[in-house]
Picture 1: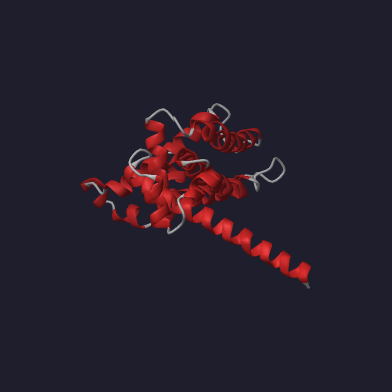
Picture 2: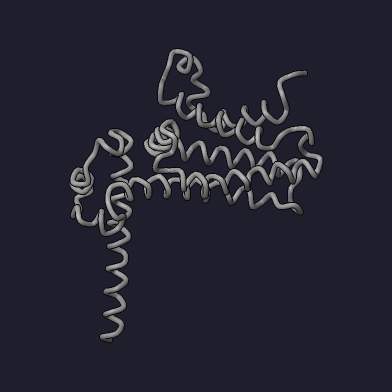
Amino acid sequence: MAHQAKSTDKQIDKQIDTDAREKLIQVAGELFSQHGLDGVSTREIAAKAELNVSLISYYFGGKEGLYKTVIHEFALTMHKYVQKYLEELTEEKVEAKTFIVNITQGLVAVTKLKIGLRHLSVILHREMLSGLPYARETHENVFNELANETIAVFKRAQRKGILRKDINPQVLFLTLIFTIENYVLQRQLETKFWKSCPQVLEDTDEFVIELVKIIFEGVLK
């Protein structure tokens, strides 16, 4: 009984640790997006999270480590969302119908994730504009892996005759990603032009379907 009680206590302590760590990441992401890395203190983060400030050093080694973790966790989440759709497009399974369906679903998932966690997208965009001072390792690993996995799917589709062989798969990948990035940014800006396109603003699925149609079917008759 004593052994069982100790085991239960350890499980509770582990859950408390996990909850505290996740709470700090969540709160820090919101504050970093609003004020930047230098514009918020560890005490402000801890106060908003209602946790002891020492936990930031304990879990992350300090504010910079927490900032890097916020970015890294966002990247891992994005990779997880997309990977399940890419895994359905192996050499044996990839065909025209499944290719379009999975690419569309993957893009919808990423777009909705970026919209739902737009404060994290703000941090990432700020990092990119600054030359990736704190996010380079994450970019070179997580995002690079995601890019290579997606490009590999495009190359499989070329071998199967689904995509034209004279199309550069890297350019195709960048075209899709840059379009999604700008779509998410434009939603936040709410310019006059964007307000004149309510169907695009209100229906992310419809936007992605239209994007896939334009990219993969073309616009010329």
